[in-house]
Amino acid sequence: MWMRSTMAYRASFLMTTFGNFAGTALDFVAIVLMFTRVDSLGGFSFAEVAFLYGTTSTSFGIADLLMGSMDRLGRRVRDGTLDTLLVRPAPVLAQVAADKFALRRLGRLTQGALVLGWAIARLDIAWTPVHLLLLPVMLISGAGIFSSVFVVGGAFQFLSNDASEVQNSFTYGGNTLLQFPPTVFAKDLVRGVTFVVPLAFVNWLPALRILGRDDPLGLPGWIDFAPPLVAGACLALSGLAWRAGLRSYRSTGS
Image (cartoon, rainbow, N blue to C red; front, side, top):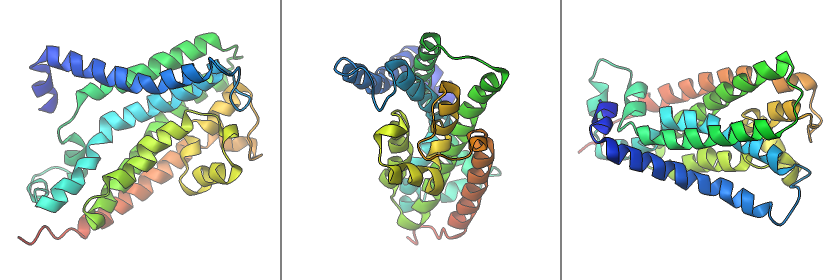
């Protein structure tokens, strides 16, 4: 319904999508400007950083397109309009994800994919069958991990009533973090996004294998192939968190 509503005004859709594309492109412009002053960042070349940027932006773009409406949940909890979703014969999570579905978010996804394509063309990567398989698996698994963070953030809003900014610190903030190589951050931070909130599995660990780079934490090599398992575990845990949050909902009482 929301997609049909959007496409009813195609000129508006094209302008808002381009605005989303241009707005997110400013993140990459900042990286471009940074490399006008330095030759490498944490030992990574411009093309390698662009590869990191493209992989995380593409994964996040998919998750944002599908689950980006979760930050509206706090408003529905506060005013009680979530009740209307509870009486419909459809999963509440699917309804919340589709709430005011913003097709313009395709701009972010397109921009990230274009940067990724450019980086792949510039890099001298020995594309083995393993690398060719690892790249799409990394993108899909990364989208799953980001989606689980969106769902957990939504579940937390049942308790806080408004925690969208806390959620954004892990989703949008995590996307920004992963655009840069792990070597520029303290090892404690890298450990945190590996073992606590496993955002490193979105692109850092598998991307380092594709780029032929060493893992700064010295983890076993098989860890680079763990994103699908991590994504599955994150989605399962986020499902449990969502069910717990939904059961705690008591409407507004007004």
